[in-house]
Length: 287
Image (cartoon, rainbow, N blue to C red; front, side):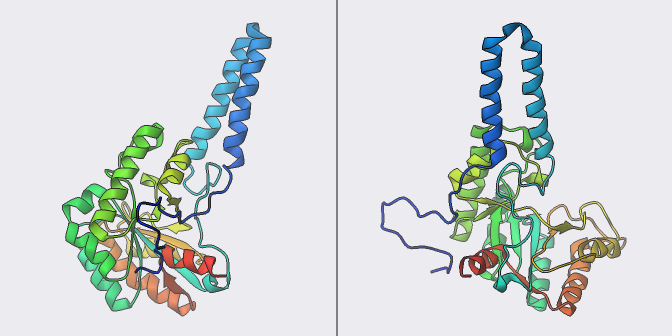
């Protein structure tokens, strides 16, 4: 059995893998704010333009928060690995938007050669088209996590029921293909809204963003991407690259293949080791 699995009686509800803490203060505050505005409107209905403006202002704050991938205002969000002695020299390599039938096999071979395990945030629809690749990711010791079913560009303005369908479909697809359910979710482009955290709780997923990224879907110079990832690199950082939608270098090579050896070599010179997000979670729990 996978070390992250927890046995339970047949027919019993699955044991949760994430602690259920209270909702973020910002969500509680906005609920209280709506109640306050409603009461104020009932007491002073002629001032309704002010009360309407107050609601719009509240929504504007949440919209802005949803555009900030690394904020925790809308709920728990891994932007770095958890603190603790066992993660003190660890960093995580995360790879998004695959699996890609051309690029991903080359990435897997390269990671094997470099003896690095990574976390792949995969799109369910792409994994369904490349089922063997999804299985291969797990078979080679990497983690397969949820990056939505179709990676829609309107994800951040989607309502709860549609969010649940989209993320839940990816969860079922990836579990069916790999044999184990994803534990982490990364929003398309990192954008989200106020409705996402309750959906993730329902599916027992934890949101994961990143510490630093190379913008390797549009930058064609490996040196520029490498510099962005290594500048200020520190223990517990989460790095983001792409095997899906990867930019090509000037000689037509997927950029991630040119960047990975440089990043991994530089990280090891700084005495940093690579872990998956799942391994970092276990390390944190065993403190």
